[in-house]
Each structure stands twice: as structure tokens, then as C-alpha cells.
Image 1 (cartoon, rainbow, N blue to C red):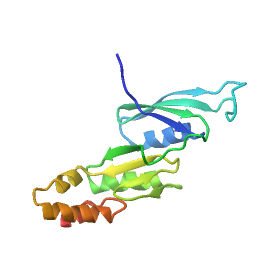
Image 2: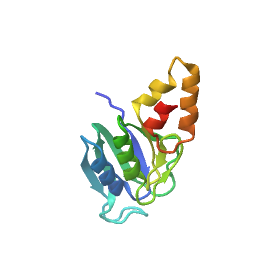
Image 3: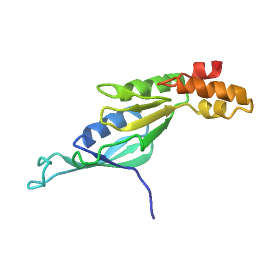
Length: 156
């Protein structure tokens, strides 16, 4: 049986990132941590995490501490559906804490450089409104936001 799972390349923070991520999302856990053995090539320290297998909200991820040569970009992001403003606020603040940074339209970068989108399902409904003027107002409101605010979208 085949499966497709995200594989994330970290400099040296895979285990720290996995611990943060599994603390935030339901149905999440660290499955396995493989450690670099003695004599491993640089930049690894013997005993440090080489790879981490973890599950976020039921989806298995692989993470590697492979060094700094392949940093994350916004070309890849994790899309989080957050049903309520409380959930949006929770994920937003937890993921930008300790060095992350907000971006535009519900996007953010966490302290490890990984991009996330924190988006309520109502956004797609409002953008698809048959009243194209209203959909345009929603689009303009969203483009002015960093963190999505549901009440402001609905008011548009």
C-alpha cells in the first residue's frame, strides 16, 4: 500500500518543531525519533535527532535535521482549517510565538521558518458569494488582513 506524506527538511530543529506542533493539534503525537550515531557527518552531533516521525491531526509527517542548505519558503505551507475565531487566534498566536512572523491573508511563518495558513471555511463561502460585489468586498477585506478576522469578513 502506498501513502503520501509531507517531508520537512530542518536545519537542526526537527525534534523541537515536532514537539511544538504535536502540542497544538488534536490527534497528534511523536511516533519515532532516530538519532545520529557516533561518527555521523557534520553538522550532526552524536545523539542529536536525525529524523522525526510525527502525526498532526491524523496525518503522518517525516522531518529531517539535514543542515541549512534547504530552507523553507512560502512556496510550501501547511493549511489549517480553523472553524472559529477562537481557533484562528489560538493557532495564530501559538505559531508566531518566540520568533515567528505574520504575513498576509492568514499566512504566517513559524519560528522554524515553516509557512502556515490559518483559514476559516467561511472565507471560501464568502469569496464564492453569488453577489460579486460582496465577494469583492470580502476579497479586499482579506487582502488588508494578516490574521483572518471572521467578523470583519462577514461585515464586508
